Image 1: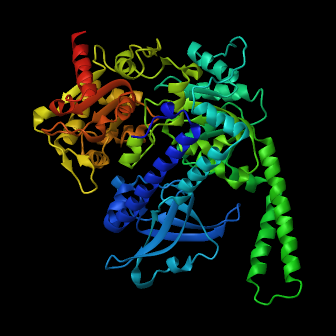
Image 2 (image 1 turned 45 degrees about the horizontal axis):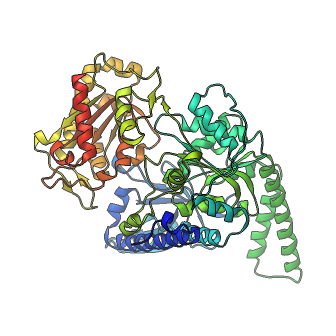
Image 3 (image 1 turned 180 degrees about the vertical axis):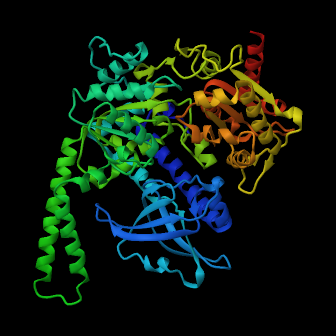
Length: 630
């Protein structure tokens, strides 16, 4: 058995252990990807959102970063397939498929931009793009996600660098992996308008921290508001900060809030939501808007044309060197101005390894949604900082770990979680939540947060109907529901899916159509299983009663609802069997996310006999039953 880090008390040994676990995850994910690509079939990849087929190839061009880019347009999909997993930075591969379903792979690249059914992919110079513009023999062209070697390489490099580190990085490494006390400044609390007492305290603790601080933000407690204020106040003491998160979506969210606060944000990488506001603070958009950019573009064009000349004269090399030197000079000048003006540099954790940040150091690094990031990923940006502020909630969604042995070995335990356990004095829990009815909050508070949460007065008793129960549980076991395993290994339950929509219909009838429309009440239907989500979307599309309300209803997995909230949440738990097998419903952090998305009404559908063999679901059932007696 591998000793715990507390037992070894050796940062180097623990980092070696992390590297070993990450290697296991890497090897399993790579093998699974290869096996999946060979066995799963293109249709299933499209359904999962991991491929577009067919696509129409658009124009090719050089972007402002001098990368050769090609456009691809998704030309056919139905509502069940509208979602996809393509986002900025992810590696992809173009392929073509003929009548006999034989797949030919052509060339790869990285997603530069995706919006709706249009994707832009950055590819290597010389990629055979013309092969796909008019594919032979009527072959269909497609694009699929490819295995991400780059992220793993950067995480391995970060672990190696951290193990060898001296100086400040070495100090933070030894601090984070031992019970050594973190250092702080001493000054009285400052007051901040619009923040409650625990939010105020959190900002003050961030400002006092010399080494590390943790803002622990349970659902609805205003973690982002607190973090934005902490960044704003830090920038009254420092010229520039680095802000990172695990996902592009989380980086977008915090960046937008910082821009709203009046801060100059430079976003490295492209946003997931493509609109003028989001694009306006991206590096690429700022770069091409710079007054010197037209001149740089003209020089780069001249370089490309010069490369293509067949007859090279005696002064060809001199001319090329002169053009390249001028291009480098202009690029450095533009970058110096962009980075010099920015107060916040924002990127994903992996994106912080971008060559644009080479040589840059920051007084403070803020890592948002830190409880969803692997330890190795956090060490990528930590090398650039003197102190680190973590924000998130390790009682919600954990990092995704696919290798069971690596998970069992502790790969899913985050750096934030480790610091919370070893240094509780650096952690501030935000206690007042502004999202949900007190009765919805209370179960989560009791189970996950030591009964420390408080509902703000304005939401404490907020409900849609008078004398309504905020939580109800429909026991689908009474209706002979049964789960089924589908081709992808996911689970679905046909009877429960139908009951889910019937339960929503019944509640809508109590509220009334006019009120739903006038007040724009919104609904989230959540299932932990992707197969059930797809089945629910299919049934919803055919449901005539709910048709007028479809734009008010979102159906997604728990992960898809992270960071969101709805007036009404309906959860389909799916599992129904005689053995009491509940699979990854045992990951209670996911259930914490699901039940805390609801503002005013939570409807749970699940087989009581199957689920209540687990203490969490037994306690939840008892809690819902007790509400009926109050």
